[in-house]
Each structure stands twice: as structure tokens, then as C-alpha cells.
Image 1 (cartoon, protein in one colour):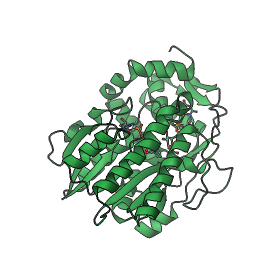
Image 2 (image 1 turned 45 degrees about the vertical axis):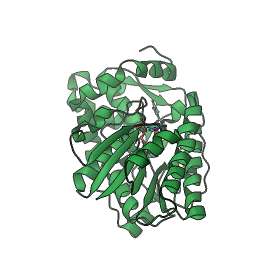
Image 3 (image 1 turned 180 degrees about the vertical axis):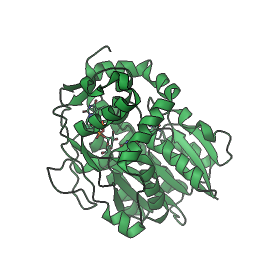
Image 4 (image 1 turned 45 degrees about the horizontal axis):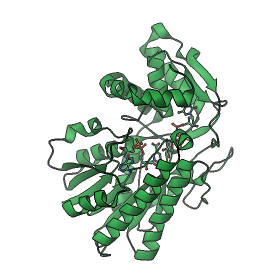
Amino acid sequence: MKTVLVTGGAGFIGSNFVHYLLENRNDLHVVVLDKLTYAGNLKNLSRWEKDSRFSFEKGDIAEKNDVLAVFQKYSIDWIAHFAAESHVDRSILGPEEFVRTNVVGTFVLLETARTTWNQNFEGKRFLHVSTDEVYGTLGESGFFTEETPYAPNSPYSASKAGSDHLVRSYFHTYGMPVVTTNCSNNYGPFHFPEKLIPLMILNCLHGKNLPVYGDGKNIRDWLFVKDHCSAIALALEKGRAGETYAVGTRNEKNNLEIVETICKIMDEHFPEKAPHSKLIQFVKDRPGHDFRYAIDPSKIEKELGWKPVYSFEKAIRDTIQWYLENEDWWKEILSGKYQEYYSSQYDTGK
Ligand code: NAD
Ligand code: DAU
């Protein structure tokens, strides 16, 4: 039985990854370390509460003592590192926490692993979950690959770039078996409603404006979170040490297309409120807004045999269905602190 430490396992992708591991493997003990920031939610993991293969530890990856305590309590074999401040708009409003968690936190985790493992890395793995945003922006053509030079444009992506460089250095300097994945925009269940897709679904439900930044022509390459989880599991176990893998499903859409797709599906669910597209409102653009992200995933496909299995057309419907069926989950989030963030970001009290 191997013990896998999942940092940030109470967040969106981390919790989907915990579900993926525990649903698909019987040979793993999953230990989640999470600070439970505004984005972390224990409810995301509640179905595993009584499962002996699952443990939860509340702690901050940027606090040495918190991380060390986990390494002393469990014999950690593999690490899947998701914990981060992840929202670009919040990094523009307040970058400090991004540097603390994403850069310092990743360093503390690497250093605690290196010293606890005593530089004996036999059977050990450190998988760092990063983003395609570290590569900056693309024009109308071309794709990000593992060879694309780093050019981050937001405090969020700069902090993730910093963490990627630290991870790389632990391979080259200490021989730690690290693997980094750089993926495109995820969507799916448990996605915090500050991000484009869940925000638009919930605003449609509440008859609120759908705030599209700029002209809505910015392009993202949407990856269903369950496909991302299978890629991470593969890279964690089989990825070559010191390598990076770009993860995406060749699914480019501009933001307006995404919002209009959500509106059409919401029209089917609630014909009496159609057309939801009347709620679309173009608002001021995000500063430093990257124009286009697009991933060439050939390396992970060829080298590790990764195959995504979800189509966008079905997965976006399933995602909307999940939000319709999980009102208790998002109702709690939409109250309190989230409203303060929403008002400061969108300049509205609504
Ligand atoms: P999220 O914001 O939903 O969750 C982050 C989790 O990390 C939360 O549970 C939070 O409580 C925890 N956390 C934050 N600071 C912490 C700290 N100091 N110590 C311990 N835990 C802490 O993020 P997400 O969307 O699930 O993203 C997960 C990872 O994937 C991040 O590293 C992010 O950069 C990366 N990523 C996300 C996307 C995406 O589309 N969401 C795409 C590419 C890469
Ligand atoms: O590319 C991977 C990245 O994807 C991850 O590293 C980040 O953690 C994740 O948050 C995501 O970043 P984005 O900035 O691309 O995601 P977001 O959902 O915030 O925005 C997607 C696009 O939609 C972007 O072009 C901005 C736009 N947008 C977003 C919001 C929240 C709007 O037009 N209106 C909005 O209200």
C-alpha cells in the first residue's frame, strides 16, 4: 500500500483527483493536506470520511511545522501537489498570498520531502500540478508545448512559474523524482463559482448578468476535470522523472462561445426564462488578459498513452446537471465572504 499526499485536495481539481484515486485504486492510502481557504471545502470529500484509505489533515503548505507534522505522522511515498491560490482575478486584487502559497509553499513542500526522504528517493514521486498560463499568451495560431519558453503575465501565473522552476531545480540539483504537468482550463463538478463556467451557470440560474470581459473573443482550451485526473494519475506513476507534460484535449473555445453554450443548455432546462443570452453583459477587460491558450498534448499521449474520454458536448451538459443537482453545495458558498469578493470584482452589490 503506497501513501499519497494530496495537497489542496479539498479544492476543485484536488478533490476530483481524490475521488479518481479512491474510485480506481485499492492499493493507495490518500492523505489530504489542505488549509481550507475560501476555495477549500471538506464537503467535496465527505463521501470518503469513513473510508480507512482516506485521511485529512488541515494545514498550510507554507508553514514548515504543518508540513513536517504530516511527514512525521505518515510515511509518504508519492506527492500530488495541487495546493495553490488559483484565481487570476484575485491575484490582481492581492498578489501577496499567491507568492506565499504558490512559491514559498511549494518550496517548503519540496524541502520537507527532500529532508524527510533523506535524499533516498527510491519509490518516491513528486507530481507538481501547474498551468499553461506560465507560457503567457498565444496569437491566433500555434500551440503551447513542453518546449515553449516561460512568459507569465499575471501575478498568479508568475507565482506558478516560480514554483515550476523550484520543482525543476530539485530534480537537477538533488535528483528528486519530480514530474510537472502544465494543463489548460479545467471544468466540471466542485468548480468554485468565481471561475467562468460555474459563475455563468449560477448567474443564469439567478437571473443575474453574465459578465464577459472585453469582447469575449479570448480563447481557452477547455479540459474536463476527470480527463485531467487520469492524466495526473498516469504522470504521477509513470511520468519520467524531471520531465514536464502539457495536458489538454484540443478543445479551444472563445469565452462568448462558452457563455452562449451554457445559455442554450439553460434554455432547455428553463424554457420559461429563455433566452438566457439576454443576460450577457460585456464588462471591462481583465488587466493583462492573455488572448489565447492552446495545448499540444502529443507528448503525454505518445509517451504515457494518455487518452481523454469525455467530449465537451457531453461533459458541459453533465457539469450543468451537477450544479442543478447540488444546490446545497453552492448555496453555502454563495453566501457571506463570496459576496464581498463578487462586489469588489464586478463593482456591483448584486
Ligand atoms: P482551487 O482554488 O479550487 O483549490 C485550491 C486548494 O488549495 C483549496 O482546497 C485550498 O484550500 C488549498 N490551499 C490554498 N492555499 C493553501 C495553503 N497555503 N496550504 C494548503 N492548502 C492550500 O484550485 P484548483 O482549480 O483545484 O487548482 C488546483 C491546482 O491546479 C492549482 O495548483 C492550480 O494552479 C492548478 N491548475 C488549475 C487549473 C484550473 O483550471 N482550475 C488549470 C491549470 C492548473
Ligand atoms: O489555463 C489554466 C488556468 O485556467 C488555471 O491555471 C487557473 O487556475 C484557472 O483559474 C484558469 O484561469 P483563467 O483565468 O483562464 O480562468 P477563468 O475562469 O478566471 O477565466 C476564463 C476566461 O473567461 C478568461 O479569458 C477570463 C474570462 N472571464 C472570466 C470571468 C471569471 C470572463 O469573461 N468573465 C468572468 O466573469
